[in-house]
Length: 130
Image (cartoon, rainbow, N blue to C red; front, side, top):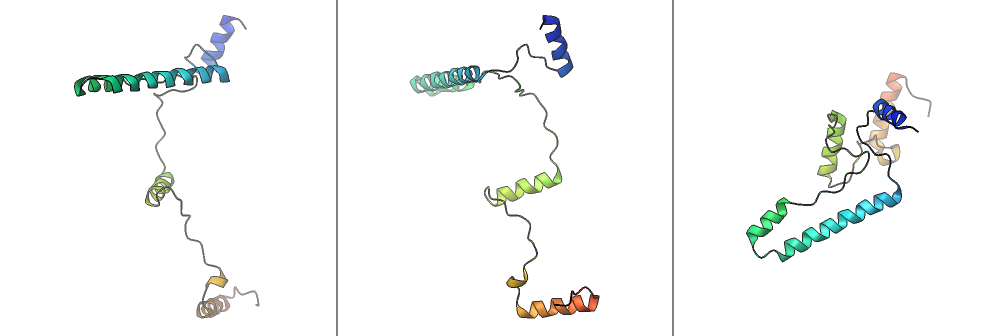
């Protein structure tokens, strides 16, 4: 592809970046560079002689190398009411999800409840003759 064709493809896709998709080796190399930066950061923090120096070091936390397709400036769509209630249920249950209560089966009902349900069904004419 010519440089003009590449620029045209980037313009069509809305990509402002000058690089394409990374290979697995490039991703692993970026991960290694990030981990090395984190290790150096922790070593500098450990070797700091006093709290004032540590505070200065903490202000310069290393940032990961930008990966293709990852944009930190993107705006998230607003959360729907259904999504909000789902997340609140997850928080209440400490990460576990409890689905909405379903109708109990006949086996889980008492004989009095079953008789009452049959009487209502017969009165409405929705019984199947059982």
